[in-house]
Image 1 (cartoon, rainbow, N blue to C red):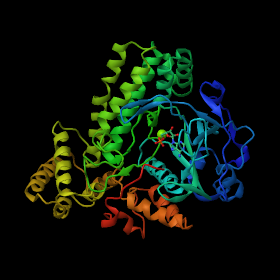
Image 2 (cartoon, rainbow, N blue to C red):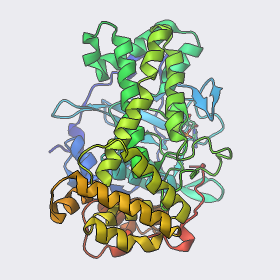
Image 3 (cartoon, rainbow, N blue to C red):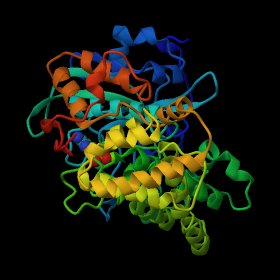
Length: 487
Ligand code: AMP
Ligand code: MG
């Protein structure tokens, strides 16, 4: 266990120099205070959880203090936003404070979001509000607990600093952890500004730090791209299987590590809805729930374009061709497990699709249906869940198919089936209305609900005493909350 001043820094990205990032000091928040900290994330840095309660913790992550070894930098990148290329973006309100190595030798970027203006702030104020910082914190830690690759969040620091959005809010900072903050958009920036030497330096950096095993391959850059394709296919399969809608899949929000990154107006589905659009600025539904799959490929193609100086177009196309089949295999594997199946049959894809269509037409709660399907033997469970459906004949036909499939699947007890299904079907997810309740309390100075929700969501598969109201469908007011993009 370490104290705060015992972290080991080695700032390799900063050493790439001024073509890649700019030195900027954080702009402190007024009256910084701890809103919530993740003990699990602190453990990644070997930090003693008790230090979260010390004043120096809020000072460090509220921008008042810095480690002597920290080298805060704003990174430059660009990216495709809603399909159009924006030539220059960059860290407009976040700073890479430094890179820390833990005792296991793992590397973690410390990134402070909401740390003030940088050369890349464009029209923005460099700030993040408490609302969006809490949402990013809860989502990062909740996705991680579901087994979905994601950046992590160490803490949220609140303040009395006024920040103007649609109304006046309070500034906050979230300390994000990731093995890297390099995005697809970093590669696009050096490609479109025609800086092949710096682009190669960036590629070497990523290869050395994050894909060292690709060095062994005859074409290391190609091997790295292939790996990025594979990781994205797997990550997006998990989003789709768990009903997670990212909301802003611009290429500047896509991590080179294939982790969920840069949370904005994200949402978990309540009722299953393939066409769900969580970002109310996304008028055309470019990033709707079901579009996330083809958009994943579109984004990888944008990265491939940026890699054409290093890799032949044919090889890039071949690697891109891996995406859909890999996605489908991962997705189907996860959905089989969610349905409690241990073997594979060709018709399973159709079994899943039929169920989703029925859920879609009846507005069935996606998470709760799958959770309760494991509560009892298949025949009893479907009989109990039947009432949720409008098309009863359709559901009965599906239920017959499902029961027959379960019977063919294997010889196991209901205890085994329940245990297996509950281990992959969460009882608790980060529903928008739950986040909203926690935010409303936090905005009036009461952080207990944020902490309770965070704690609950770190164990989403485990039924927890006294938490029944968190395992319900949302109330009417909480069903169609509009999540603002202004964060
Ligand atoms: P995002 O939608 O949060 O992924 O941000 C897109 C771009 O806008 C990034 O370059 C951000 O750094 C920048 N940005 C977003 N909000 C602000 C803000 N309040 N101040 C400065 N830059 C911002
Ligand atoms: Mg972003």
